[in-house]
Length: 307
Image (cartoon, rainbow, N blue to C red):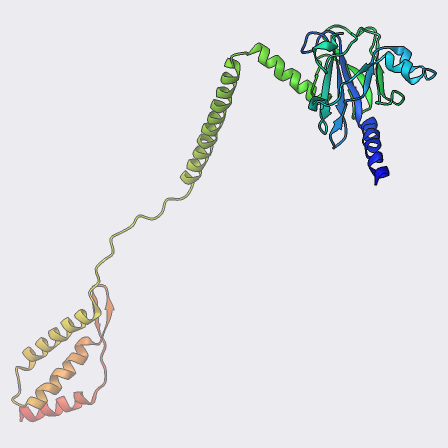
């Protein structure tokens, strides 16, 4: 159990050696107006930088130095403070101003172009990471690492405490430049209004064009036949009743009665059959003769009456 507990700090230290990396260095252009060093935690676990050593003295790279000799040439990052705990994919900035009495983020050395920066583990033996600042690094710029490509480059706009993503840095630069040119947001307001009015204009033109197209299409369609008021046709039952009454009246006037009720009824029926047997044509009535036994009887009756 004791052996296992002893291995835990060693495992954490080994993890820190692989995860903590120098990511960016600036000369006298940091947030505090001094040179600064950015250290990145590339892992997905929190790493504690406390107890590590950092220096700009190139003599520490001599492998023949003893541990005490190397430690004397380096600055110890204090322990026991949450500031040194670097969260996953985050970073910490140390200020190389030579005033370590100002706090644990300040070192006992300063930086100049051409200097080296080296980080050693707490044992003073294992080199965690190192870099060399270009001798021609201009003021206002930084020496930054592109973790995707694994290369170093000059960054025109330093990004302390931020990821060294070149594409994102370009976007941030454009945003910062826009803020500098339009501090009160007037240009942004005019741009937004321009976008809105442009959209409204496009909608107006769209509906106007298609409205005109549809109207032209409707005008080419042949006009429909005008609606005429429907003629009121007599119901069939009413028309038949009128014809029946007219036939009865005509037969009654012609016969004037014979004194024989059955004979009168027969004559009326015969006349009605002849009266109603015609084609229905506009303005023309056609009487169609029909053969009936009543015709012979009518002749016999008429002959008997004449005797």
